[in-house]
Image (cartoon, helix red, strand yellow):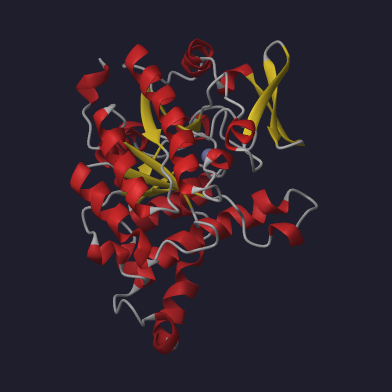
Length: 330
Ligand SMILES: [Zn+2]
């Protein structure tokens, strides 16, 4: 339920809009492309970032038939003018809708929306529903605003009403400029970002106000589940700071939201399952990026987890999260 994809050809949005470091692809050699952020090199990607048949073949090696796809978080472009971000989002969403239509047994799509403008975001959510995507992927913060902010309520309301699932992905990592060495934004910042998103939504009462919204947090919830004892203790010892918008103990929300299984560590995964239950843990890979679990679920198959638990992770939890049926893929 957690893989990334990008269109092979991206318009030069920076030229079109006349500003900004919108991502474009420099196909400098066959089978690979440079992602460019303005004039800056961002990341080298391979053909499995955009070629649907190659992706299906690579997945087959690990007996996996279906990929839930979403864009690469650097494409969110929440910093852009809202109408420009809407246009970019529509381009990406249409590309994924075309993919899903062409390969309905192999792909499920999540869209992206201009989170910086709730009105336009809701407008695009309605279109996302019409073109057959099953949910959206959003960032862990929106231009440094937390997901507890009231300005996002119309978006949560629309996701509930339209039966669209939400995946929260870390991006725009806090402290990035202070952690330029050792890949720290990815190793330290990302897990912290995801915990930031979960804590914000819990303490802001978002799950109380929108109880039917189905949210899935990347990388097994980042550092949240591993620090739940500290988070709960903070809630109990300083309610004047923590419990100001929601009186419910944060531990109560374990089992309310979904997470993926991307831990790279079977003991850590067992700890996550103990806390949220196997019905809330989905098979995620972060394919095709190197920090992902590129031997899709192999560490789970080789573990001593029971058959029911494995079936929940490999199948049932994602079906529940997206509110879809297994029979649609047979
Ligand atoms: Zn990812």
